[in-house]
Image 1 (cartoon, one colour):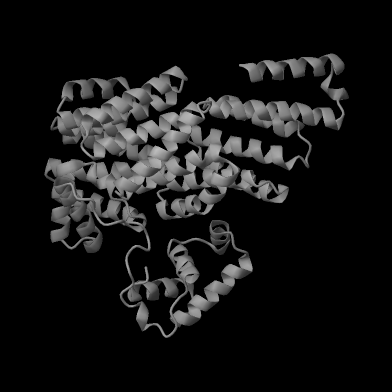
Image 2 (tube, rainbow, N blue to C red):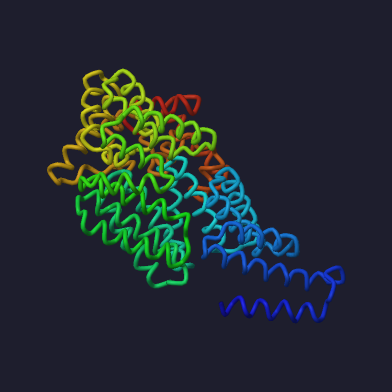
Length: 457
């Protein structure tokens, strides 16, 4: 409130000096742009997408062309707003543009914040390894130059490790994020995000009481600071807890009151009504495909597999499961399947008997077994598996070459590898040539195929 009062006072003083915007000199116009940029940034803390876009567009209209620091900041704010609105294509474009501007400006922090935005989009696109690479690269710098924003990196890494089912690692990152969110209470949505994920972590460990209590705290934050778009996240998590507790009546009521199709489908399955669940999921899947929301689409396909299995149509169930496994395996999803419980474990056992995605299915079944024994499964972090055949190479790949090889296998372009590893384009191309020479191949696809055969990936 105090900041807004000062901004209004500054605007009043300008209005008294310059009754018409047409008579403004460039310096004054730039000042007006800065006021709008500050308002845009305040709206980010309030999670108000519409206000962000209004103020950001105004800022870009008035800011001097060479005021790159402010232009980068408001362009990044626009990426945040578009992401809130679900327009991920525009969000990615805005974050990439902000990164480009900030690199020219010479600012230290702004590029890191734009990279965080891109990493968050990669998460939503199910590109967990790429997002994790981005987060890991910038964590040391963001901790040094902007500890205020380090919590965003911690929570991003926590989400990824949660999906990899590295629960201990995920919880450590959540605790760091939560500590920073409490320290910088002026950005309450970060507190909400940390508490929400912590509730999911407790649920994954079977601690329903702690999960429910933490979720109530997150809901209180969302309501206190007027984050209505976050309430469905709370209700979805609440439904998962209620289903674990066997309280179908309240879960049913909540999913009828809120627009949460995946949670509604889970309730219908728990009620023994797979046909209704399948109808709902088919409609929702089409919506997600139109929006190109890869994360929600994958969740839907996984649940469709469970629904078909419950309905007794295992041919359709295996068809959906195979599609889900093909989408999930390249980025190591595990928790996504574990959260669907016993029905998914049964279906995976059937898939194993059919030889579907043999290594991945075995890994998932092992994770299910670990759920019941309480033993933490082996780390799913890329690079944690030793190469069995690396010694067959005449000249072993260097650590940097192995790093680039992993990124090539994920389909990154040379330019994306440059951004991810902070290397010049010529440097990356040079590494590629050396990788090709050592593997005795002539193309990226041949390099990846050869590396898989040698156990390097």
